[in-house]
Image (cartoon, rainbow, N blue to C red; front, side, top):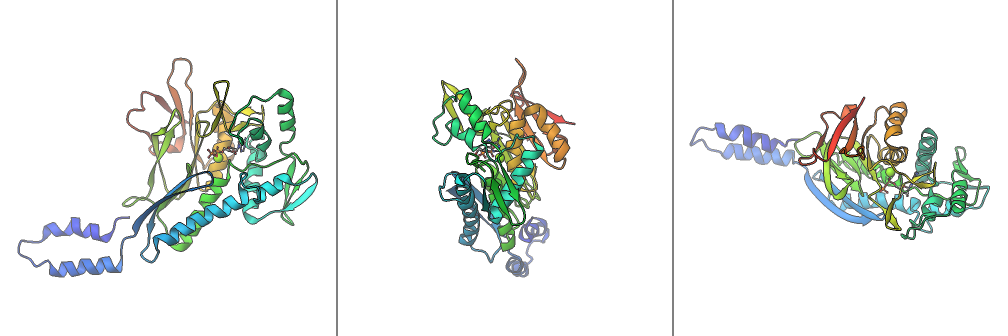
Length: 365
Ligand code: ADP
Ligand code: MG
């Protein structure tokens, strides 16, 4: 998105013979900049949804920084108010408390989220489960203090999973079991960036980056480019980026056990549950997904993390061949860790300098 100003300065100025009056050119420049002013960049950061949001947006001339901040904050707040497990009065918390065999009407935001969750749950054979709440609770994630559950407690939490269904006409959830409780933490942030991106586009913002705690939406491209170069966190040291991918009009989401964990007897347990075992998922260090929608990128990053290195790529090939992914997992004894990326990321994915020795990169066929 090069501005006309830049083109004229670099391409034209040097050709004028010495002594030529620059006044007409100056007028031309002023007129051009007045007629077609380049967007101005506005960057801002704020806390929301238990994490940090940062945005870098290119504003057209008629939009004020405060207006776009309100759009983004309003979008995140709408999703949080409806879907946060941490707010006792949110729609999702009320659904979690609903009695067995009750029918609960749901809002449009909640329907979108539950429908996608249900679809991912079915396709993944239960790896993604919006009712993993009972497991999260049991392992101590809500109290932020881990404890190793007894087998009987695990069995009882597992029996609470999935006893609900979404009905279409009228739109409502039928909860079959009182103990089935919801946690949309694996997908709601993706929905939130989608909502912000849609509202920003409607307001005339077509280039920018929205980052909600590692769930990104990339509108258009960076200044002078038609895409964004986005960093991926090093799962072995979350303060560093270890690789980049180029992305445009798409969302990028990463799930990793390094993001949130509890310590039990000196061991770290990550916050993504494997409903097949009732224990925190193991196998991958991180799963990054690039998809056209945030809700899909977020939901899929959690799903792939649970599925693990062997099943994740097979699952993508079967259901989401248009989606890109980068999986990081430990190497075999003595070998460096592995980064497996989908084939179409060739040329778009690269390790940052210094990480070639730490990771071997392979592209899935
Ligand atoms: P982050 O919250 O770091 O962005 P994820 O998108 O991977 O990471 O979501 C992890 C969250 O998803 C957990 O904190 C929990 O709220 C929820 N969750 C845990 N296990 C599952 C699961 N098997 N399926 C769906 N959601 C899950
Ligand atoms: Mg997720």
